Image (cartoon, rainbow, N blue to C red):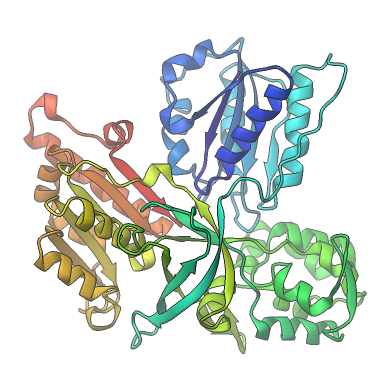
Length: 523
């Protein structure tokens, strides 16, 4: 048996390892392989495949799974008669293409002749319980005649290294801008907690106090009533503040709410995919209760809501230069809509609700696919927009400390140069002392015609090609849309390089991926 995984936040690899451990209890030894490192030549010879894959963006496979996904859907994929499989699809029901990458792989394996030995599971963000049942079912289906049917238990807190932390300081990086971005520094409390540039951390936020108050008003109840929630007796305000997701909605929440209250208007909304997608964008639990009033007891409503989910942030500093500290770059989500201020849960929590000296817990989410090359002679090309600059600040601190003579090139895009050049002093210092070889900037609002990083990449195509021929690694960080556009431009650059190079020096994005030189972290 081979367990293949592909994800972004570490959940797929965690599930893969836990599945392996559970099979080992049954005296079986499956191997675990990242899709990014899987040898396609082995596919036709597999006997049993367990696939664990997340979905990213608009139904896309995550970067770790992209090569495998594309190969499977290409004309090169072999017939797979004699191969049995099962799929665990991970996703987020807030998005239209829920678990789409897993669904696509599941159907494609079947079309290639493989036989499903256990049904696919589609998991929302709170995946631990359903995946535990799935792992148990997979193992017992695979080996049904054992005397004792074991049950898997994937605990929510057994796969991330964690550390207590104290909020040290918070300050705005662009105080004059209309889109506030903050630098956040935390002091780590666990001496053995360590991260590397390219990693992320995750933390549980608290909901905005204003939104909690609004929900309480709509429920027409006191904040201090006691409710029974997840086998505990708690104050309602504490549950709304810390336990359930209020700042966003999902299809699952709306469906469960309709089953509870049977609003005809909500039933019609759920039946229209386009209307539903539009409704989910930007709305929160306050909107749901205002549009479809709830008449029951608050305790009945709570199981309908999703558990509050951790938020991920790329680390924006290096432990080599600031040991014991954790640096983050946080964009505050804040806008007015339908006569009410909307706030992001974690961005508001970190930059507004928490005060210096407050305690918080952070968990490490390693990102092995976004690692900085440790070789001094490997050129590094960093492409970022907005808060995507965060990991590259960490990269440069590491390069300045470890390889000050290395070649490094930053492409960065934001709105206005006088307000939104994030960490300007750092970048200017690195450029002045030679650690940063080149810096190419794109400020979209500085001129009448908008200019983005992808435009600058096209302008620098010839020199980019030279760096790529020299073995450069390319790193992209920013929004999903930005990542897609950058990918298209880099492919154009490859075509230009190929038209000017001998056949043996031809480059392609697939070759970069296979060589581990293409790294994408988009959100």
